[in-house]
Length: 252
Image 1 (tube, rainbow, N blue to C red):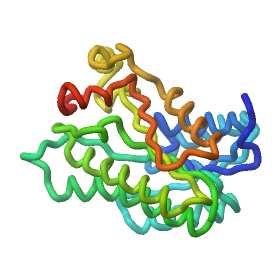
Image 2 (cartoon, rainbow, N blue to C red):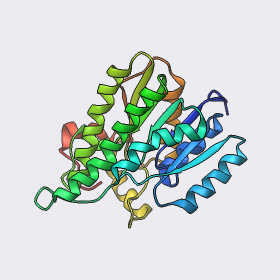
Image 3 (cartoon, rainbow, N blue to C red):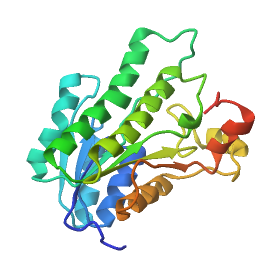
Image 4 (tube, helix red, strand yellow):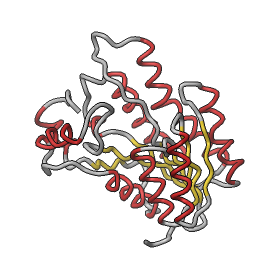
């Protein structure tokens, strides 16, 4: 693999599991040192660190629970102290729980906003203050092209992060680029298996699901470019296009 990130250091939130883990490994494969954030997945984070060492890069683990505002607000500084420098910020950590308009509670909404929008905002703000240059990628969701009646608090928080991504791209230019990636059918939610994705893939124009490596590849693409900011890449097999002809998501 092209080591175009050699000498750079990336903070990846939610790096212990799932898509965050795949992104951290891909960045390491491109030569980046990794500060891997995790919440509760200490064992998985330790295994990730071993995998990163096999790739010949330095790595540090930082724990934070984004439900606790003070932990999220101290994370960037702790990461910076550990590694000595940060060139890349990947906001991947999120919470995803169901809830419709008729039964959403205040606690549901504030929890999603805290983890999915406020924490990335604080990290972007502090990255700009402490690093002063570099690249930020925020993980969104294909459903930001419309809405999702089954996950109201979640999709509202992702809409907020979408707007923050575009605002930050303007605010922090020209020294920092800020972009978003909106995944579609990549991994099943907790409690579901691959059959869940196989069923839903029939609704996707490309008639198949994606994989974490597809998201990691999109992140590498954005990090390689020096002339993209304020953009959202939909890595969803065309699913977001269905918003224009078939109404809102209700089942993914």
